[in-house]
Image (cartoon, rainbow, N blue to C red; front, side):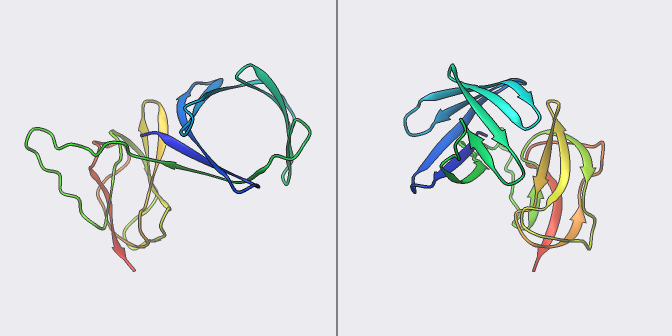
Length: 173
């Protein structure tokens, strides 16, 4: 599932960048409209100063709690948001039909449960983390898609879950 970043500029335009590749030192984005690739590497960092190499061109970044400057000027970005999108719907395996329950949070991936953040009776809001999974040496937050009260928890730490398995049931408010 690719991650899409939307950069809204002060001039009102929006640029959509798709995360193509991520390593320890390099990130590659693709402009979804033009197809242009941007290879970004962090070359040097000390205190709040960074040197980013973007497609072979160096940019100097300085940041504080309230301010970021790029090449010694304020960037023209008014908003940055991201989402993970699913490009292809999951296909049922060899005659097994997976029924989706409306008030159940399911695992988006196969992995091992590291931590369950909720228990029955606890109120959750849309976007709250209900569990942490580990998959391919990464920790993934499983978030609630609705607000309500947790009715049932189906997993426990250490248990392996498959993609689509139930994590928690929520009674909507």
